[in-house]
Length: 121
Image: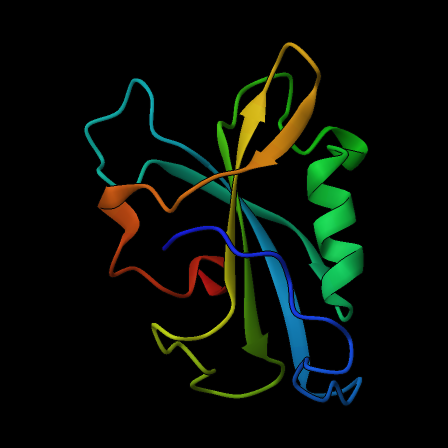
């Protein structure tokens, strides 16, 4: 997926505080035979802009001292047995830049083109 800036608040899906969440999943694909790499989901937000801010600014060292090279923010539904995992759902990719200690927007890595639901395990 090609990076696109987040929708403006007026164009965003309505966020009932009990239904829509944004998971942040960290991914490292180096030094592993697993095509999906090593993953962890250290943060969940109810506000998309807050999630984006946390990733871009590497809040609480999301990169874990450069361990994780990618971050993905996904929109999903809270407290559902089968959350929304459609390919067209909101998904933003970032790549870690260790020189400036920030994540920068990037295109979706090819090996993840058909993968959804990182944040729900």
